Length: 127
Image 1 (cartoon, rainbow, N blue to C red):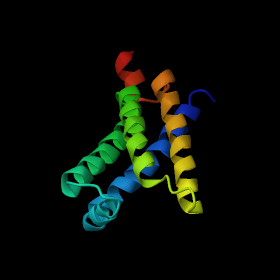
Image 2 (image 1 turned 135 degrees about the horizontal axis):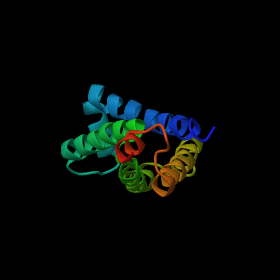
Image 3 (image 1 turned 90 degrees about the vertical axis):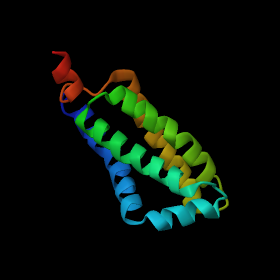
Image 4 (image 1 turned 120 degrees about the vertical axis):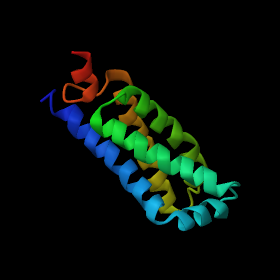
């Protein structure tokens, strides 16, 4: 079990970042509009940075390569994202998104603390 569970956890955590990053690739203008609606300046470079963080971080996490660092960066990325876009607690959907991000941060912190597990490039390259 301890061999496969960390891999399953990484797959599930990486999936949300890869899907969100792909959404930004195919809906870049919409991402910029969403950010602008929240008063974010410089939407093009910041949306690009978010897209790259999600895709590169998601892929590194999925592969288990430098997974502790990738998880740390993704967790740090979620802090301002959550505080900027998901604090309208009068809106039930935003409350759920806030809690979802907290749960994702919890999972990422586990990877930061315990690593990627046996089925990972980190483990394979260290052997």
